[in-house]
Image 1 (cartoon, helix red, strand yellow):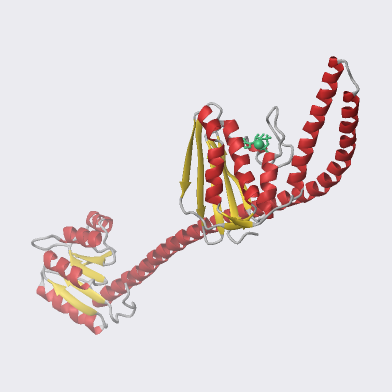
Image 2: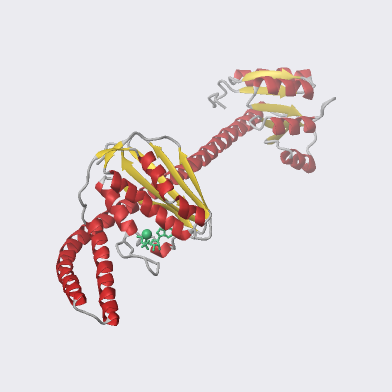
Length: 396
Ligand SMILES: Nc1ncnc2c1ncn2[C@@H]1O[C@H](COP(=O)(O)OP(=O)(O)O)[C@@H](O)[C@H]1O
Ligand SMILES: [Mg+2]
């Protein structure tokens, strides 16, 4: 197919005929028109030459001893579809013509033929062949391009998806930051305003209490003081979430913090038949941090996990690092966080527990953020929940 086509130059025609005279005569005519000519005196020999030389065209006699013309025609068209065939036939019957065309002949020429007619028919078939082959090539090219477009499309779609996900995360992060900032202002002002009068209430209640003899009334004041204490605890926790309390930076081994936290909860995990698995893929180097804050991250996550697995389960803590971050994962086999709650679990006061404060994860988020880290619910479904935390190795 790579051979340039047209005007006989460089085009090869094979003549297969058992009559020597026909071979000689036809060869002379075709050579004089600039074609390369090959000859064979029977079908088998002809096929071998087709295989070796890939001629553009074969002039094939219908009536030959040995392999007959029709069989040779079918064989050539089947095995070498780019080689076209014109049949020579002595009989001019319609049926034979139809049969030959059906078997793949491009044309048929009645013997005896005149030279001009032979050349015209050959040139016409070669032109058709050139167009058909070009067409086929274009079709293949078209299919190749379609496949290429498809694969580009797939790649583009994947990239759009990836960018969309990045955007979603970035937006979620902005919202988290805004919430934290707003909470900071609100909580700082509010706790100040509430704690002062609360202090006075406590003081006066204590004064009242010391002058009371009635044990029933003493019990009431006791209850008031207890409630005041509860409110104060919530306010203190809220303040912790909103504003960073005093902190002390030292080299903190996250692995050691995790070990400590797991030990701290040992009796609880044992009681609830929770299997604890630790997988430290790579122990990260110590990071500059406040040990107490890092501890809070894990204790709050573990407390929540244990709460979800009161009937037993597996608590899995993984630790790893890359060249930027310490990466920790806390996974439980609890019942998961419902989709509609996912965006809210880090919000202060969001809780689904009867006696929850909803401040645990808010505090964890505040701490992680103060180290320029990230936290996300990486997975949460009916099989459990995974929180993933990243803390920069360089501290903040
Ligand atoms: N591991 C977990 N599995 C399922 N739900 C969780 C998990 N951790 C947190 N949650 C959900 O997030 C809410 C907020 O958690 P948190 O801030 O620690 O507050 P609290 O524990 O006081 O409810 C929980 O009430 C619970 O609905
Ligand atoms: Mg909690």
